[in-house]
Image (cartoon, rainbow, N blue to C red):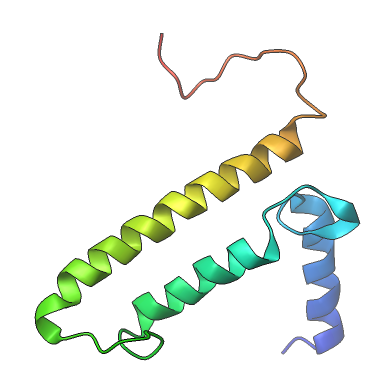
Length: 103
């Protein structure tokens, strides 16, 4: 079993290795408020009705879940795209071929 010290060292090493997924050294990443809102909505998806302001009727759960999931995905895509652009900008100044695009 790993100790807390070993886990801490591995986690901190991943911050440097992976990069761009933290808010260290003043990076221009998504705001805490935006990430907290997405996280709150993920909790609402995991525990329907528990974190909601109003009671959700079982007949509405599919529609409410679809709308919330769509919202979370849209916001996450937007925030993660901005973060990746911020991370890559200093490294990739010239236009590069994007292998995932065709034509």
